[in-house]
Length: 265
Picture 1 (spheres, rainbow, N blue to C red):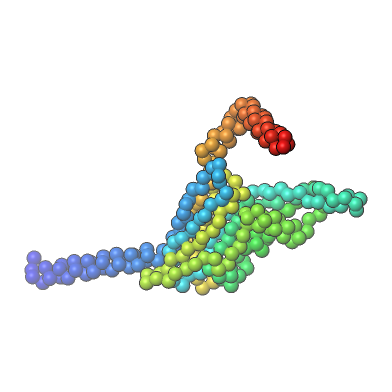
Picture 2 (picture 1 turned 180 degrees about the horizontal axis):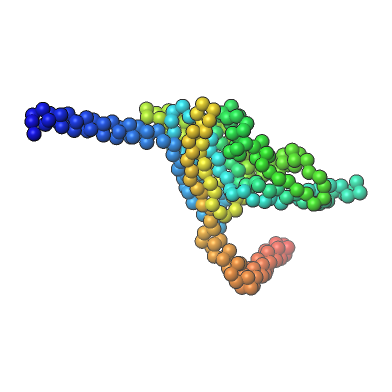
């Protein structure tokens, strides 16, 4: 092998090392800009003193991205009763509404108004915002023809009253850093939410399009005495019924004793 050939091999090896170094550097930069999503805590235990929880959704994004955070339960059915006047005299329950293709929980937060970020077709496709949910919902009644707009608005009011639905534009805080941005969303998890697994989805919007998505989950589960009582109710209903009667009797005797003592003065 000649000196010229050795020189060429040496130059080629150096070029490959430089390319490999560039790949590592650029890969590290790309990784630092990748959209991430972390939910803290990712498990909520329902115990005896449970009354909801404090949650934080946080992560990294590109500096210029607008962000949308959507927390939902799987789609299902929701049943509501409606009232009316019987013979134009008495208010009473007149029938029921069945809402299909709606999540039991829908909590939407963003860095800015979502209708400024995305066009209507993208909002509808990704079920972002109440109007998008309305475009997917199916409403049926056993007693009357349904005016979707009116009864969907009633459904939203009912869900918001129970803290199961919310839209908070501007609630996601983003901090610009040297290699991108970090974001943070603080929220109150409603105690009305039933046990189950909930999806947390973060969407990065750039130039009017959804460019990246990141996901995590929240698991809500009974724990401790609450879990034991629930298992007993499902697996041994007879024993659970006897215990409930005994507890009710003891509580009744206790209340009676207190009032009897108070009435003797």
